[in-house]
Length: 171
Image (tube, rainbow, N blue to C red; front, side, top):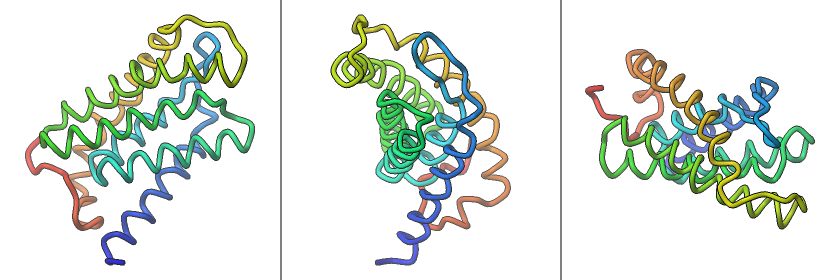
């Protein structure tokens, strides 16, 4: 295994731990708990690590929150946003596409997944797009935080610390 892969795995775990540690900072919206910190982490991981590691970080933090009893099966909706954020950024190399990926992936795709999680796993009644507005609000707040902090992280040299990254040089 390459040194850069090990670094990315460690950073993935650290970002997942940060999302879990910040999970008490939640916003109750309807039947769901919205976690802006999770979406901030998704964008940071998507931009600096790529789609696979971003999805892994979102999955790990969602799993940990579920195991600790602070999350629900709907928490896994963030995996879609993290993956799409990283994929769009990797392919198009512009930060706005990463932000759109997080928003669309979590709010729309993740919101539809949450419908199935709520009805099939949690036995709750809901319409297909019930969770889209709440997830959009949560995702938007975390994405705005990421949009404000990613330039500072870049100036601090985070991409050099990680090694092989997908971060563009001009934002």
